[in-house]
Amino acid sequence: DTGELCLQSAQCKSSCCHRTSGLSLARCAPKAAEFQECSPKSLYGVYYKCPCESGLSCDVDKTIVGSITNSDFGTC
Image 1 (cartoon, rainbow, N blue to C red):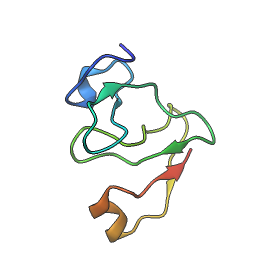
Image 2: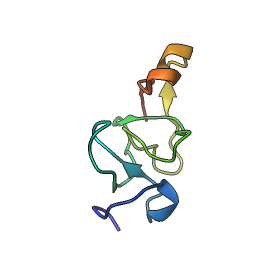
Image 3: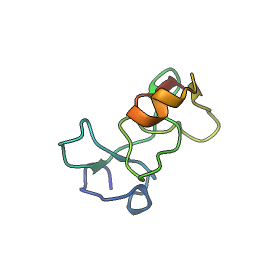
């Protein structure tokens, strides 16, 4: 459920395990709505920004640097 601690997104009803920084605990969070910030699929199963709700896509500037630093965010 939203707000519960998680280690990976598969544990969450929303499929988004979210953390605000590298040091914070990850918690389940709702998916991003239209015009909210989002991130593409995470390799680690934890997001700094949640992916979009179904039917929306995350417009991201895909760069190698962004992928490495986990800062390639976009907008739904």
